[in-house]
Image 1 (tube, rainbow, N blue to C red):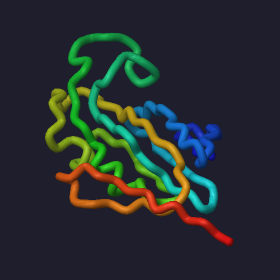
Image 2: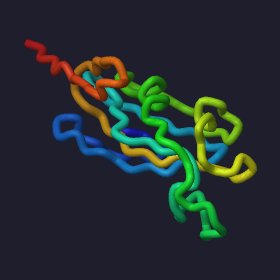
Image 3: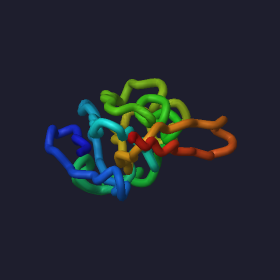
Length: 137
């Protein structure tokens, strides 16, 4: 099970690695929790004014600006059984390199799931992820 920031359970079967989409608004907390024997895997993450949706009610301009924050979300969440990240417009890790105008509120859009095993990372320039599947007798 993965838990979203609204504390509503979303089921993700670690054996089939179902990825969930999440939109997290400024001032909210992204929270993911996986069952024992599995870890969080962030497959994509973008911070900015990604699209009109739950966090942006209308297109008043600047839709599509932002930056890829997969590396940051990986560092904070991937490979852990659970994580929580507060999404704040003044977070320098999220804002550095953000192409949106500074005074415009941004949000996080990501896809994540729970996978069985342990997540091992290689240097980011390789963009290679490896999951070690654990089998218990």
